[in-house]
Length: 128
Image 1 (tube, rainbow, N blue to C red):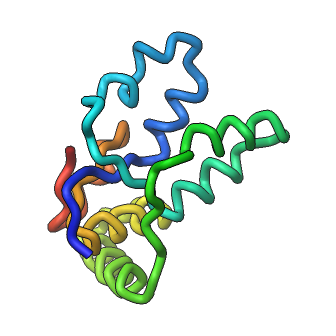
Image 2 (image 1 turned 120 degrees about the vertical axis):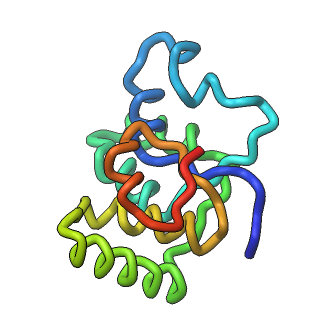
Image 3 (image 1 turned 60 degrees about the vertical axis):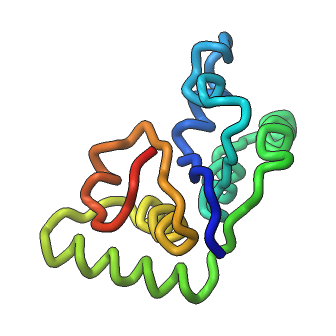
């Protein structure tokens, strides 16, 4: 599956959910015609952090209409390759970030993130 667009990392959504002035967020600054995607891992992270029903509903509303990239066998294999590469170079990052990056690489999409430092360590990953 090859697409044009970008994978939005968890931190971008968290910034949007937390800021009272949504117009000053990275998510709000993206072009209206941008094709946005979200990793299944990001859905997990956002729902894990939603500590009550209102927050869970906010996450559901925010993600409504954004296609979710599956965490399938190909993503899993790519994640393992990223893990081994980072470990060999002593540049490990959070497993969930590895999974998000593997999703983006598998589906040929760049990642939009607030965490440039970690994601820049991953070979063959394009940052939006």
